[in-house]
Image 1 (tube, one colour):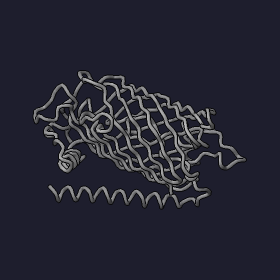
Image 2 (spheres, one colour):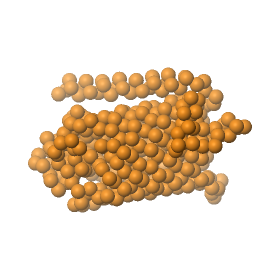
Image 3 (cartoon, rainbow, N blue to C red):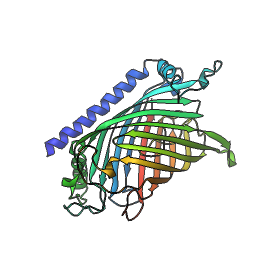
Image 4 (cartoon, rainbow, N blue to C red):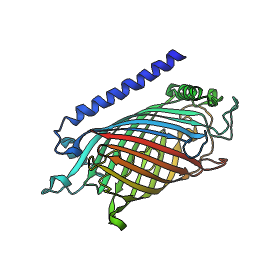
Length: 346
């Protein structure tokens, strides 16, 4: 078992190195015109230990994302896509559409509320894991609009290594090890194609601070998640720049990995809401191609979040507190969990 965990850790390390190399290679396709054109790396963790102090439902998520520098031919391609189509200025290159490629790897872990029994808890959500690789097209136009077309492919079930990862970390910190993983969803390849669009409307605020409103919409199709979403984010702080809020692990509000580097110390606080209409969620509906444990999901789910972003030159740190409404019939309480991210802009 120790050897297996060591091998898994090695796999994740090699994948992380690969993503970093890809960022460096792709970022070098187009020479940097400014400090903003370099690649970015972001590490994200989400856990219900933060704020909620629980160990249930969406128990943990981790993700590493690499965003390449601006690539002209990617921008030209993005400008021809129906949803990405914009009016590209001819006189000010700084206001042109900037497009990047995103690469990521991640893992989500889901458990029922009662983790002290090895028996199947039929009235609660299934044990499940999701291990995935993502690639996407990200386009920004001078901080006024953000578009993202993103594909995640991976596996659900024992091959996601969710049981191994949770067992290892719980044992390491002396926490209770969930006992019902024998009832998790079966192995199944999964995919979800996401589209997100957000627009930024800046406004002046008191004491020299800035404020903006960021409405967004989006959705996904696939055997992992099929849904539609709409929401709004409000930010207040110093030099809000061209980012659209901190990154999050899906399903979530569409924060962006991109931000403007430099400028010393900057900060902002934010809050937001999102409503989702969920047609299919494999982590509640169960396996698509085989019989498995499932629960009756609720068709409408909402998130309310608030947080803080701190930036110092090329580093950015964020913390987000999320409240998610009940996702399935019989769920006792809404879920509360936190999200941490650390990013570096090369």
